[in-house]
Length: 267
Length: 203
Image (cartoon, rainbow over all chains, first blue to last red; front, side, top):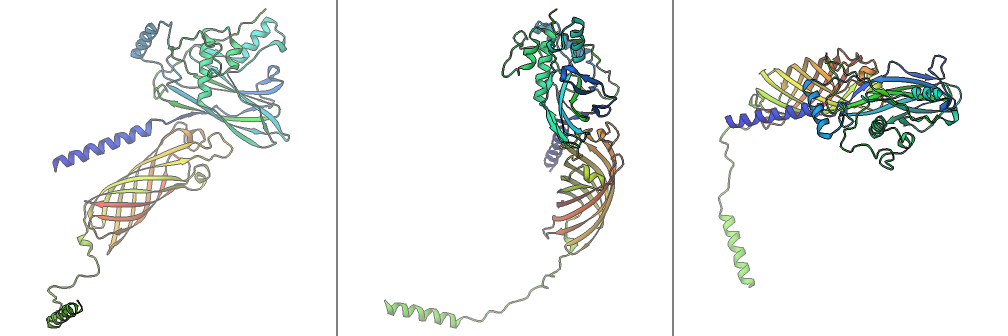
């Protein structure tokens, strides 16, 4: 009888533990920008000749990750030594799974075309299109000779007047962005080839990237809407925090200072 | 051959004719056709339930109905009063028309303590119950829509409802239907209705 009770208690404990684990295993956390971005609105961020003359609107979401503690810093140092790398990333794409869901509403009375671009920063490198445009301007490069690519460029979408469409930037898209940005931060020679090609199809530009190096995840996500009419984008960043990296409570915030990427510009 | 068959037939007919008549003999009172609830098991019990949870009002526009799985464990203090602990979980698909929050999956977990009053008439019992507890959302999604405060995932919950129980006469087992109205303090919806069917075992 006592043995039976003990077995029942053990079974109940196991069931509760399994249920708790199941509840926490894959729960995403969502981050929204402060508000919608409206392209074509007089208060929008501007127009971009490099984007084909479309109206632009940009919103940034900076994800609140926690800083590593003393033990974790020591482990990162050990890992870098073992892999013979100058440093290894704290936020890794294998630990932080990102995706993005958006809706675009055409606020105009005429149909229009919209495109979603995603850029951002990892803890080492920031990919800022404005900085690239500024570098071209400093070098005196003609507008038609400028190559301005985003880490992710969605397909142009036709949107009827007053209609709303929805879309996603999937986890594998963010994986590709993370890998490209990692490569750009280390070796920036193959800038255009790296961004144009998908790494699974053509790994051009990735030859110098050490295979064993952990790929850093993006912690700052910059979403740009390019539209030829007045349009509004609402989006949501979805984080599956598999490595327990998101900050909670009063944990210290991870605040890296990444270098801004500038492509090699021929004089 | 025919002669042997004839002889066998005559022998059987003679035996049957010679047998004494049989009369039924009543040795005790006949069983009552109505079951006695006092013979049903009483005390510690457990329930497993399955059903649906539907949000009310604006909540129904933004959150789809969900499948509910739940467990109850309780104790009948007297035959018509029980206290019970109740845990349930439900899964919902978000709607939020025209917003990026649409089409996401969301789980709602609840744990509550409840008081149950019931009247049993033969095999059927009618119950009323109420309780309070905590609910937890699996994600912070509702915080991005204004239905909860940002990053709020927990809420106090008040429950009230009733049920109908049918006893199988096997002493320990009964089945039933239960309906509960829930009011969440931290979720800006008028409430939710849970309707479940359950199986119960009383130890």
